[in-house]
Length: 520
Image 1 (cartoon, helix red, strand yellow):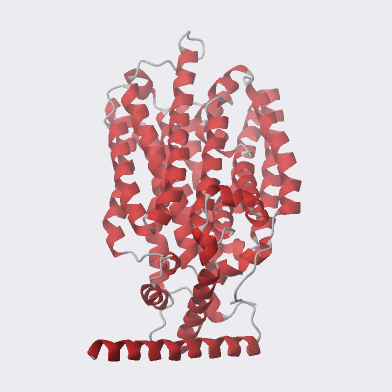
Image 2: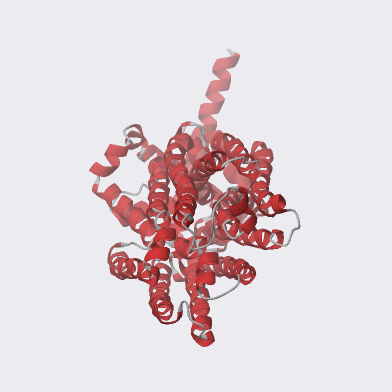
């Protein structure tokens, strides 16, 4: 059972987590805004594209829509790789200062696009910035969160990310009714600039990650931040836990120092424990995307129209859909530290697979017909699908991948995880428009089969990480842990406190000797 101190989340800690969520909404809004853009008739008119499936130019339109999604995901792939380098090389704060201006420029290019080339360039840059931020945000949040509440805090990344989907959908729906055709699609795209702009302004007042500082030998700065994160200056129990956490962090960093010097992409593939981490991260992201979630969402307006709904109703349902997903992610943040990461993934993937089977059957039977009950049932399973995904999978993927890598590999590990995510979206989204136009509901079979394969693999191979300090999770993958922080007996905690006091005395003696040397 976690102690009160292990569960405690200070106001400062929560404020930092929520400020970082501006990076989450930057990705969520920027990624999803094109799902409403392709539902705006004025966008098709401006770029001389056809939304009529009987038109000879419809195939060209499908290739452009696939290219728009692919451009963002391709940019995200390279952004994730760069983010893995910059988070280590530049630090967490300076990586924010690097990524946010690019996101601002990307939004401006899309909103002001004069041609498709300019629009696609904006999507590539937007994806690149989002890739960097998606590596950084959950990792940064996990590094400043107390062990017993880490799932809840990092899950806010998923909540706000999908909240960005919802905001994009509602703004897109509202702008559909604007009298100015340019405003209908340009204004929603322009809102992309807002979130990274606010984050850019806040970044100078954010603290650096204490774990990154420890890896750079800046222990005094790291302790100052840990003390403030735990709000421990006037709370004896909080300061005791803060010292224990800091001592464990510091000792683990010292134990990993030689490994950190040799940490490369290739070294990760040579170590059995790191290979297992890479496999778990791959299956987490690949498995989540293989449920069909992004295909269903990004083409939701087109899919609803295929079920016989009008353009207006399709846009409205798309907004309601992601609003439910946002609520589901918040429920997930409340469950994840109680139920555990692996169980939630298994429950979610099973639920999504069953919904997709029923949705495929209904689409095969009723798509293109006037059978109201059959079409309504199809819409119902769309919504049940996203409820399972939001409650069980979405936020869980980011929490799990941000936890399983040790301090010296966490940035590279998150880069790997997000690279897999973006490559999966490229593979699934680019052909989706053409696939639905040619083979229809049969495209769902790809995702049903993949999810059926992924579920037992995850169940048999994934270690659970709930409630453990980041440094302790390494033991689950077969690595040596220098010290334990959670689940200590009273005697072990007293021994740890004595070690901390001894280190404090040694530090004071060294400081006094340094002062004497300097004065002489």
